[in-house]
Image 1 (cartoon, rainbow, N blue to C red):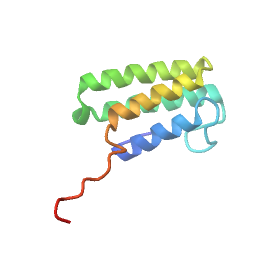
Image 2 (cartoon, rainbow, N blue to C red):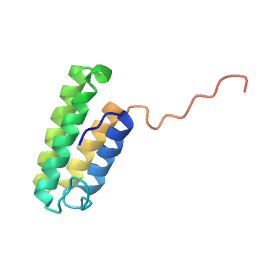
Image 3 (cartoon, helix red, strand yellow):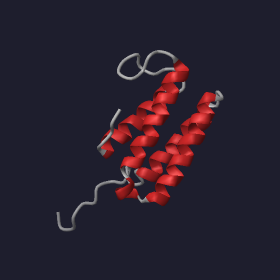
Image 4 (cartoon, rainbow, N blue to C red):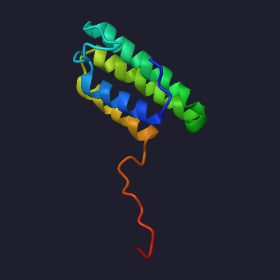
Length: 108
């Protein structure tokens, strides 16, 4: 899967967060084999994150990559809540202002 927009990366991160480790939709790249689907999802996430090195820088993406590896390991070991938290950390690093309210210009 090729992810070329930041919005698509964010959506895919959220899909993995909601679906891992064994509840991926049985469509697209997912086969219904939980272990293979988990492997596929995290491989795609790691590749997609590297696509945005110009926006984030290599150092930040090294941190993201380490968190994705750790999250994958947690999910594979049955530690779903820890995996979810690690993916939240990734989302916070890549999209730190996702909950910030839009600034209203003065005088309006």
